[in-house]
Image 1 (spheres, one colour):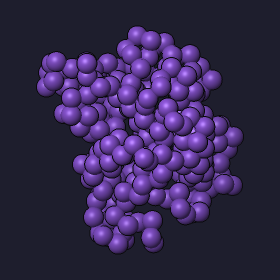
Image 2 (tube, one colour; image 1 turned 90 degrees about the vertical axis):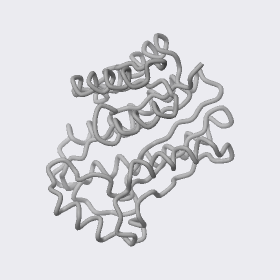
Image 3 (tube, one colour; image 1 turned 30 degrees about the vertical axis):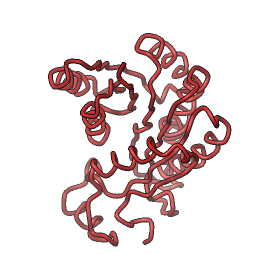
Length: 239
């Protein structure tokens, strides 16, 4: 039987690239989307053509409606099976300082980056006695710049949750995080902006999806790791 991975926000960008990489490694993949249904369907079609002996399923959950996420994910895992690995990748990068962060934005950022992952994990950890949960973070968690205040606060919270959950659900489930540097230009930003960000890292390199996957593989293979945050960021956390 193939191993299985659930990836949130997997229709496009990093999530889709990770879905392809896991598929290449022989995993069945549950691709989660919110509104990017067409992109998700295209990805599923591609994966089924390329890997006909594996299972690929598309599921849609609105993570902002976090109070219903637990029931929905329980139904999904009951149908498609509980995965061996969960990758919390879904994210939204909204620009607003603390002063400009209206209540709805505050709730949405915390729902996507913290509350919904917790609800998913609560279901998973009650039904799985040997699993891995990996949170994809942002190396900006080591800073306090408030240009994207609620995004950053919610990602900081997700990092702390990763460590707390690692302690509560050990030894059955291992929790680890990966803090990412510049992988792709943020939506709405051009290549020149992205190039400048990359140039400001100590290694002056783009963070490749291959290296993100290598970090994931290291975590999965090292059973002594839990509650750790790995920096895969070209040294950006140093500056």
